[in-house]
Image (cartoon, rainbow, N blue to C red; front, side):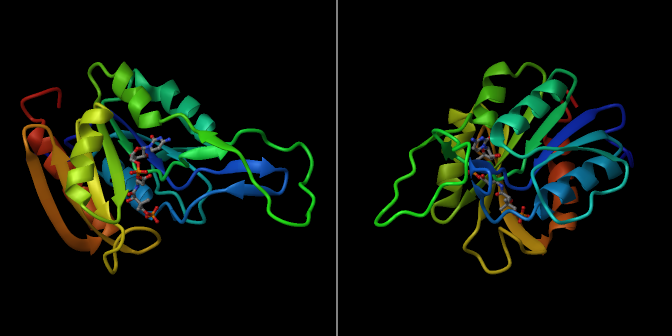
Length: 222
Ligand code: PMT
């Protein structure tokens, strides 16, 4: 097979956490290090794609030959992804997007008070679902971090979000999930596609995932 199967294609990868501000000094976020998403971007670029990496705040170095767009909030990430959506062939949503944001961002630092404090939260935009609604030629790949019934929930998200593939991650498995160098996942697709990838470095796994998706799509757009 061709060494650069994604040559001439544009791939957009999102990575890392998003940050939702509570006030000027505090925010809500999660433990995503960006490693899995950065590995996906590196793999796309190695396979010949023009690669856009939309990244939340992380402390790792970007792969070479990749255009990095740095974002903070879920809303920023949505805007950045939409900008490249029409011209993209594949969108990979590895980012651990915050599901909730503060209903109002306090303009000043919140002061300590006696007793309990309640912060009202509201849902953020579900970027993957929004892309699922707008999809035409694009192959839409989501990730799913789960702690139980991993494949079952991934299949649910595949349908609900109108994605083409969901890469399901059991984040309770030793050496898998948030922050680790390694991961093990199951790729779930339409028509009962279910491919398990045993534990491997995130970089190697990313290459295997792209090769598998390219193979599965070879009669379609790719
Ligand atoms: O960054 P690392 O430390 O290497 O860790 C990797 C990882 C565990 C973060 C990664 O492998 C992973 O599983 N990412 C998805 C985490 C996640 O947010 O899963 P979810 O089930 O909450 O979301 C499902 C999908 O919807 C994801 O593609 C997510 O990007 C997307 N989503 C979720 C919420 C939202 N508001 N908008 C979205 O687009």
